Length: 252
Image 1 (cartoon, rainbow, N blue to C red):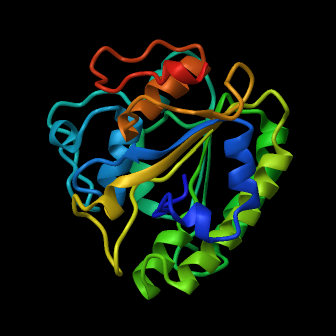
Image 2 (tube, rainbow, N blue to C red; image 1 turned 30 degrees about the vertical axis):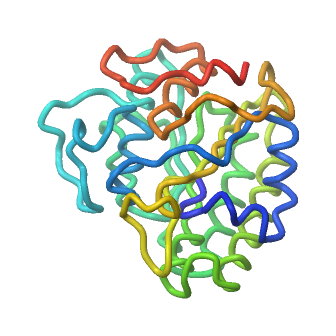
């Protein structure tokens, strides 16, 4: 997860690793976020495959769901799979039910320009050693710089390039049989996001790995709610009956 990454930044910043990932996998730069296009609501929709109107999280302040449903990690845990989290924004601890994670690494560095360096380095060190069935790596500094200097500012594009370097470090460390999904939760405009503006709602969505088409431009509509069902297929899991997203079958 590259928080706050706009698709058009891939064309304006130096992003050799992300663009190579696109060439070697299946991707779209027209995937859709959810409303409100805010980090925690978006992540709840990514992991639980329902819109904010269903899971009830509409701000970055978490509250228990009125009608709970299991998310991706919860479903994986129920099938005996091991899941790991690496992140630098603490509210993401609420994406899963207590006891669902095998390993969790958190460091409060999202507001520092080098904050993603630490997260990516730790993930690159631990994932090949631990070989979890699923690992979520959250890099949040692109969003931080967007709020400080503005989306598509030079500072923002420089941070995109910095994070791209660490994406490359992580990808190079992963075992060859890993499948990878890279996406953003939302974009941004000026120094904010959360609206239904195109700049806020469009996100990149990229998949690469065994059995995934290479150099394929996804033609079907993709939303954040499609990530969990697609990841479930990659892990050999059945999507939960209440999930409203769909597997992006076109990529296989």
